[in-house]
Every structure is written in structure tokens, then in C-alpha cells.
Length: 146
Image (cartoon, rainbow, N blue to C red; front, side, top):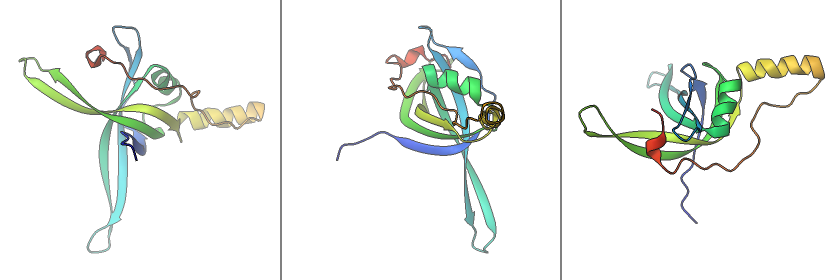
């Protein structure tokens, strides 16, 4: 069995989406995804814990999400874990853990509303998702604009 760097998340977008561009002109989008877990505590009372996951979308995934998702939209995401090194204002090395989106599906929110409107207008009920394309993150992580 070979090793594989792949994670799956389902959650809601917690930030307004701002599309940026790398020095090479590639679309880049940073997303904070709220992933919640429900459980019962020792007294049997229902509890919920939310973990925030930092996601980065590139090229067609970034364009797709900017056009069809918004804060509060629910996403199902496949991603690759990356640890990126950068320097702060004092020149000290810092590290950021991120997940680079390799596949994404909007499961609710604006795309769902658009799909319902399209169903009423055209009779089509296709989910909103990008065409399948091979994912290749930028080779030079210094090119990421945040």
C-alpha cells in the first residue's frame, strides 16, 4: 500500500471570499472552513466542538468557489496537507499548516439557490461543481500571495 497525503472535510465557509492572484497570474483563494463535531458529555448533554481548517484553492477551484460559494456555504472538500515556511517582519522563520484543495463540491448555500432557480427556469437539476481537472499546486510556495 502506498502512502497518500489526502484529507476530507465537510463544513461551512467562515470568511468572505477574496480572490487574489499569484505573481504568475494564478487565481488563489484562502478559505477558513468550520468543521463541527457533535457529541454527548459525561452528563449525556449534547455538545458541539468546532475546528477551523485553513484551505487554499488554486486556479479553476479558486475561480469556481469565488463564483458559486460565499460565507456560510457548505462544502465537501478533498485536500492535500502542506506546511509552508515564511518569514515575519523581524526575519524570523514561521510555519503555516494549510490544506490545498484537490476536489470540491458545494453542498448548500448560493449554488443550491442558483440550482433551484435553474430548475424552475430550465428543468435541469445538475449540482454546481467544476469540471474534473488534474490538480497541481504551485511548485514555488513563495508565489502564494498571503
